[in-house]
Length: 338
Ligand code: NAD
Ligand code: LMR
Image (cartoon, rainbow, N blue to C red; front, top):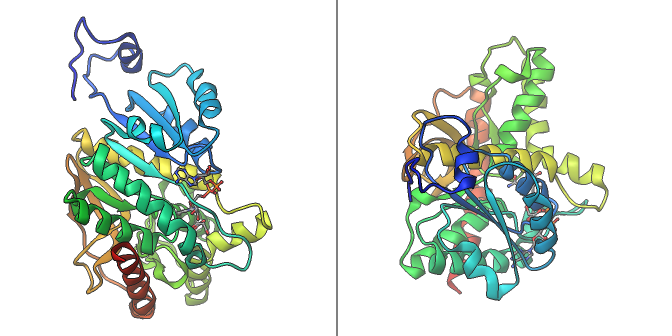
């Protein structure tokens, strides 16, 4: 749907492009669960992204208010709100990227897998609609348990005949965001320049930050690396406990989700060397889905990058996660096919 900057370009697309003569393709992004704790700040952040022309906000309740509110922000994209099943198709039609933060969050004492019974069904229904209304969209799955919801989505798309493994992503960016923050604090380096790959999955020990590949390098002790790894793995629980029954990470997740969607948009637009960690169908290990560094491009996944050299501690972490990750993936596949 690329539209050159011509006399017929809409006012909003001209505004969106500012004074630049570069042509930016029109891009529609749909958020499913847009009125929730993540959905609202994510809607705000996506409204600030100049790569969007159209922001569609869908939820089972309260989206008209969120959409009216966000739509008053004087950035170029057009905002529309959709509520309820009968408007889901319109929300999805023509979408380039669908971001899914729909579903219930954890309370203290729960694991992400405890959300499976409710969220698996929500995700399944939403993915059936994606297969019907925007089968070519990139899907950014935020709803937990990500280790199972991504395999559920894959199975739904396979059944519908629309599956393309290059277009399905579990969003694990928050793990990277946390690893960067915690490492910068410990290593006493400016956080802005820090990068750390986080691989595996998105729950407990399946979250494996590769601090041996941290950039910039710092001289941290083994104990410090162990503590940083544990804190990254338990980052979600840290927030769940601090919120004490009022949900899980929403603001940091919205930030991480907006970063990942921006990377997807850049990839679609042909920006070179866009690399993010994300949970995708993968051959990096024997597991069918795995998070690692992925190069994003015009078709979604352009290249899945390998793990790189691991420390002994990380090798052990990789082995330790495999049985849990395998069973979470299988649980999703079984659910989707029953
Ligand atoms: P929330 O309860 O505040 O919001 C969820 C929203 O989903 C609500 O507005 C609800 O109405 C909506 N919803 C429910 N069923 C729906 C359906 N069928 N269609 C559309 N919308 C529907 O929860 P939250 O804090 O925003 O968290 C949402 C999900 O994101 C949870 O599963 C949480 O565990 C997960 N999460 C993932 C990460 C990650 O790193 N991937 C980080 C934080 C939270
Ligand atoms: C997170 O990592 O913050 C999310 O997966 C939410 C949670 O339940 O921890």
